[in-house]
Image (tube, rainbow, N blue to C red):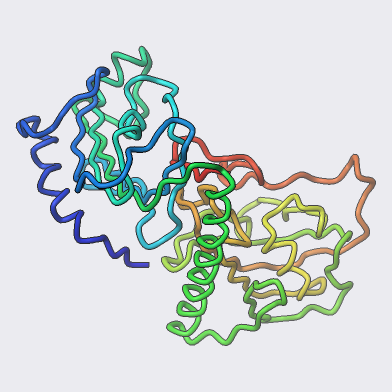
Length: 318
């Protein structure tokens, strides 16, 4: 998906050049030393502790975008005292609805304050850039949750359109389950039907959509089929739903919108709200073993288990 950045980021990008070079005198510093610049018309009240911000966030390192919510689901974050004192969240109590802001983290300063080793993707003298756009300020969590429900509905519609656009562009004639998984049956199979409560052995190849980049699988090599109990909630909802269109021996493809995959969690491509696709083959279908012997959810390439947040990414407030 091509991300359309708002016009204010053109101005922000010019300011970032000064921040990275440490030559822009218009940047201010917090007591902890965080460089920041706020673009504001001065109207309205600044956010207060205990309130919540609805934000678009862009996070950059060198020439790479680490995270962006633009064109996707906004981020909801509390206005509170940050867990550490050198943190972009420091400036939240300076922001108003409609404001834009840039915050710059120096990796060298982080290293001194945290007294720890750098993650491998960071280098000394690096600067991590955060650009914020304050979409709204909420006085209570109830108001936040009401707004978030509407945004989640919009996000779900975007994901469905993205999947359907991919299928159309690639001339794929897919069917759709009632819950929303798109599927193509190459061979329906002729054995027992996949259903809730059955233990299924599956060979699969998982790919990112729309790039088609493979992120995991067991179709080739010595890997055993993955076993799961359908409907037990131990895999992404798109698997529990989509595998039911097959019988033992069946083969086909599943195209899964993000809301039926990892949703707001960081997925296999290390981003939230990722649509996924799978080539699947149903190797076996049989009655499930006793509950104590049932297999758990596959932890694909170290991804978090369902319901566990991925660390290191801005997380929407729940």
